[in-house]
Length: 301
Ligand SMILES: [Zn+2]
Image (cartoon, rainbow, N blue to C red; front, side, top):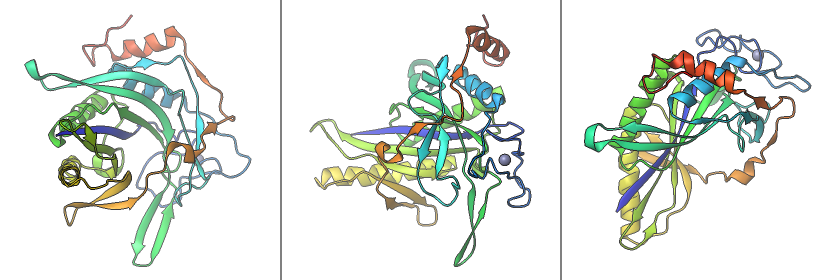
């Protein structure tokens, strides 16, 4: 029996202003005091892409041994949630900024290469505040704040390995200065895709997505719980269904949230208000040089 885990990691970037407007990214100010028509998605506004977001995205890509794509583009990902005022999120899809990297964990004879499928840049949503029993308040200060999403290949096989990967990643991102990587404050949080393969019978369970985990402890505990749940299902020959679950810290278990939206349901289409991102070798090499000395395996050229 083998557990198979892949991660989607959201990293808040340390830019001074948001991704498409000049509003501040400082958290902790009065609710809805750092918003403008652009980050509130009013009709007719024009987003203008913050160069620093591209710069930080490339730094993360180089630090994780990725190819930096000389051409990438922004798209609209359509879905409804109250925190997303526009009804779509500006992100990347078929042409991401970085692709095909890796990060090594372990040491000596036990070094293991964990593949990075891609890194893309995208905007954050606002935030729901469940202040009263029957009322939810909305704060859009975070709406439009810049993020990178790092998507790994399904190369992790246990909660402990996942924890080690995330700790190593956190150290690297902190070292290059693109993020404060604070797990409790939303600048470093994770979705975990997990299933179990019965290698003897060559069958596997459907993938479960564990959403919005924001501490190393909750990641390892949630994986442990899901691993056992999937193993029991496969041993009992019970049907499993693809779905999204969240962790209940109090009861130390995971609970179903709903069926996972499939890619087609997002109706991705190009963000025509933003031109494609086109990079030259010189621009990429300049950024590479700035990392030399911070990370020994990156050489300037
Ligand atoms: Zn704004």
